[in-house]
Amino acid sequence: MSRAALTIARRDFADAARSKFLWGVTAVLIVATLPAFNGLLGSQIIDDAADAAAFIPLSFEFYVTPLAMIAAYRSVVGERSSGSLRLLFGHPVTRRDFVLGKTLSRITLVVTVLLIATAALAAAIFAAYGELPLLLLVVVAAYVAAYGAVMTTLTVGVSAAAETRLQSLTGMLGLFLVFGPFRLWNDLAIPAAALLFTGSTSPGISQVDPGTWPTWYLYVQRLNPMETFTMSHGFVAGLVDSTSGSVGDTTVQLFGFCVLLAWATVPLTLGFRRFDHADLD
Amino acid sequence: MPSIETRGLTKRFGDDFVAVDDLDLTVEPGEVFGFLGPNGAGKSTTINMLLDFVRPTSGSISVLGRDPQTEQRAVRDRIGILPEGYSLYDRLSARKHVKFAADLEDCATDPDTVLERVGLADAADRTAGGFSKGMAQRLALGMALVDEPDLLILDEPSSGLDPNGARTMREIVRAEADRGATVFFSSHIMEQVEAVCDRVAIINDGELVTVDTVDGLRSAEDATTTLVLTVDDIAVNPTFTDIDAVAGVRRDGGTLRVDCTDPAAKAQVIAAVESTGATVTDIDVEETSLEEIFASYTAGDAVKGQP
Image (cartoon, rainbow over the protein chains, first blue to last red):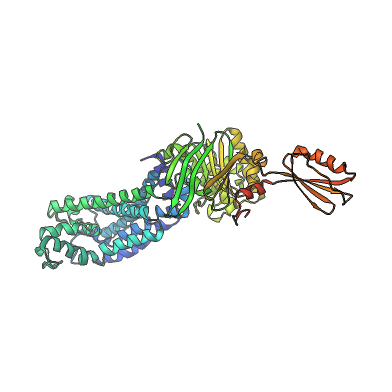
């Protein structure tokens, strides 16, 4: 990481903090997750404090991607469109420095918001059970933060590839529609994969009954980063607390993490490459 | 080693629009070089290629002896730029903008000194979001001056500036040149170029039309001095066939307009008139202005001369 990238990241993060964006989004995220989470505490679904801590990632399931989108869809294309990028290029800054600096600052931004929100949920756990499973909480928080970093990096990649802010927003919205709560992934990609592996688009798989899941299905599911995030939360919790998590098939879990890593690196690499070859006029 | 050198530089947009066509340009170290042309002539595209915002379709560029595309950091470390179409950070104060530039350059420049120099000392703590075009231009220039660049590339630096601002700009360009920096700046107004430039290139429709000193442009073949003589006797009809430097004569009543290709021929012309017995009662000299020279090089362009 070059000095220029760090300087850019620092200014960019300071700017976001000054805009009160950070605090507004954090407040919204807490309002969106805390009441529902609090309602679960003490219910039959959650047994104890450790169980509650392991559940934290599921509270953020549908919020991390929109958060990353809001925080980063303009990261590269915004400065490219407004022209502030042009002044940077009179100083010893490469296009790579710029994209790296932006990636760093937006990851910091998203991670900060997620950690504050996680702390709010942890406070609710303490209020309900009078105890905190600290190690488990740290691992869960790190997991949520890492997932936030993946989705942010993906968004920066899309922003770098885009020529306009609208393109960037549309691209991210498209990804969210496919992978997110609207189940387009299940309706389109799963049947397509089924056709590939079984020769039929409806091979009698019940999405709610894991007993009907063939091996290929386990892997295809994990290609969806949002699905992987929710399906791996038990595995992550199980690493430090066997009562609250379930390790499951380690190979499939590791495959899932590799997929997340790919989502973090491939779009950014491709987006940067496109940005690096573009005419910035 | 030239500060800027382009060879066969060409940029096409799409299939049919050639913004810059086979441009050969050499800017020597320490000179103030004016890059003149009407709007849409290809000035900004050329500058955008020098700065590696836009990639050439063909041809080569060397800035301070390096390729701006493959050696982005090394080139940008030694240049200061005022590009077209830039914007500032709305929430950042003027001082923090300069501080940011100094951080990027990794130098210990005092932001207040820079702001003083560009005439923004009073606005140091104001955020740039509320700046007028002229103030933004001053601030961007200030950021360009940080860390004493070897080469300043300024795209239409006077646009948006009031007369005071334009003077500050000229003074700074002169001072930077005196320090030893090369200054390359574009304009569509001859007047601005004339006042500070050692040499001028005129570009039109993406092609280089001419490169010369300001004096050289003036003495170019179609630059003439017109002697306007008022005589007391309107019947007088002098002949100038002996004088080679006279290119033409027009008369309107008692006024004779004599075009001279050599200003030194003026005394001979007056003597020839008075030898007919008439008295010259008034003498006026009209020099071809650089604006007219510029217009003649870029004729047919409807937008020239816009402020």
